[in-house]
Image (cartoon, rainbow, N blue to C red; front, side, top):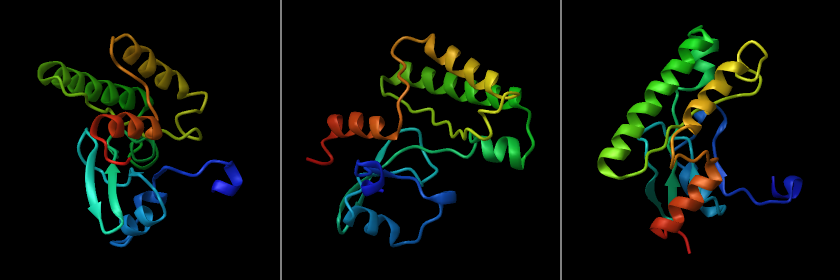
Length: 154
């Protein structure tokens, strides 16, 4: 990947969220700093490996356009409402306890980017953008923010 893109990957999201018990060890040994394969929580966590720590980033199948629209056949409007309900609850919790939350949304251009669906994605982003203090970050940016706050990797 580094030879092809010119940049060494910092994070990993496995195909279909598949991995073995050895995957975290292998990724840490290869210099990967964060993984997105663990579907739990709404805050990053740190796991230990023999090759150093790995940061786990929140990931969801509940807001993932593949299971929602392709597997379960939900309409785009329902997916949008589910995403916004999750966002509103996490925002409320963050305001109550002062800890930031991550509303993970898994989107794929060949699904959410289709002309008959993209409006709903745009509406999600427009609604989320109305709230001060909310940031739109990718995995590497979340990792950088978390690492700066926690000092996981020097």
